[in-house]
Length: 136
Image (cartoon, rainbow, N blue to C red; front, side, top):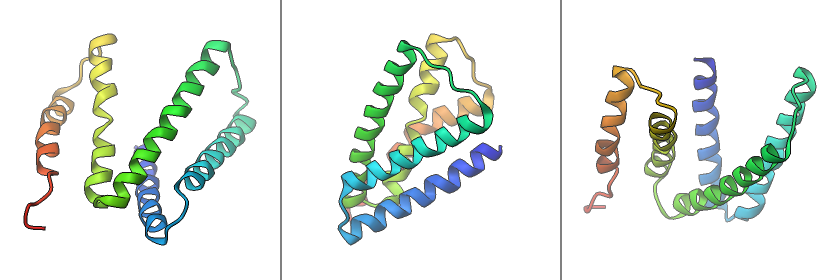
């Protein structure tokens, strides 16, 4: 629960900073690179205190692919924040968690509880409700 709370708080702060940076006309690439540098710094700090550094070639490859895809997704996010509303852009990002949940159901046979299933069923409704209002 603590992780979820901090995740929501920091994602919200990041979204607001992205939107503000777009309004100021900041360079998007440098913004994303600084975010990634801070992420690596905090990861190294965590590994230093908890002594959990173990690596392999497969792990390095997966981490590299993950880093590239996160970088590309951040570019797409900044573009959507530049041209769209922060409320709909950031909500769509948060709804993207559905993809790994569905994958875990199929690949690892993880069965969600009733409340989680209800949330998954409501995702298409949420996407429908995020559509642009024609009046605006």
